[in-house]
Length: 438
Image (cartoon, rainbow, N blue to C red; front, side, top):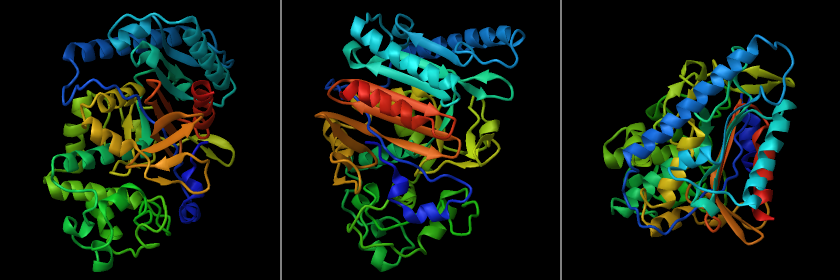
């Protein structure tokens, strides 16, 4: 069952006027026991991956340009599906040759056909990457569907950037766990020990554990009652958060909170002495070789290679790529399916955390109310078990962009779905989950 955070944050529902509230599911990643701690992937491999992606995007771009003059109005399956990689081409993306079993090839071919049909029907637009545990966790499908920019006829490809919204919470959680692993803090330290400005009833009672599990009682600074755009800086957001009372007693219940993760970002800055985005870049993005991911304040139309977001406005999809996205510790970065796959590999191969701390972060700590049994929230990760199959990760949503990464530790599979159209991600994720858990 998919986790829809909107159901848990009724206050946010009332406040969101210009945006749809974020949805949060999740599931993420394939744990390999290889102790590859703190080693960056070989530069040559990363160069080959990037080169392959550029070639695919260029070839498909020429393909689209040649078709454009011949067809102006009709949309066929072939014009809305771009950048597809299936073995053997995907073997280049993974850095080694692989051969598919007939069952695996048929499974993911049918998944591709399903997404293609939804794309032709106008119900899907985005990019998908599937890594198969039967082939060492390497990608077996990497595919762009629909248009990144409908006005200019630019297709989505595997190198297209998307806003990943609250998937960025995984970055913050891992960065905090890295500090715990190094002995700089503990999960049960109170926030007043590191972050000034809170009254004693918050500073001395709310812990890092509460913030990571959405049990702090803090609300959502990103959706002010006035409907105004929130501050663009971490300092500006914190000025508001420290003045807000708690919505409930710390630890008493689950209440999804962007504010809580923003406080974690401020804590990271206080402990390390470094800017949040710079710290994540050095300790998460660089070890994972995530070369096309950024935490910034931006307009999607101004970011090179980024998909325009198409939001439902009065029943019609509208291009809202001129709206400001505020990247912060609770989410809002932009990334690609390849970079998110690299994040999952760096995490599960323990280049970011030790095996023990990796398991601590991804393991559920409490049940999510009103959802299917087996769905739990860990430290910035959701964990679910369905038919005895475990998957972990996170999703995210903001107007025009919806996304999710599911990682299956026991199967070795990873599924990344990034979309640039409202209501597009759920059917794609549900279908992949059905394929892997039935």
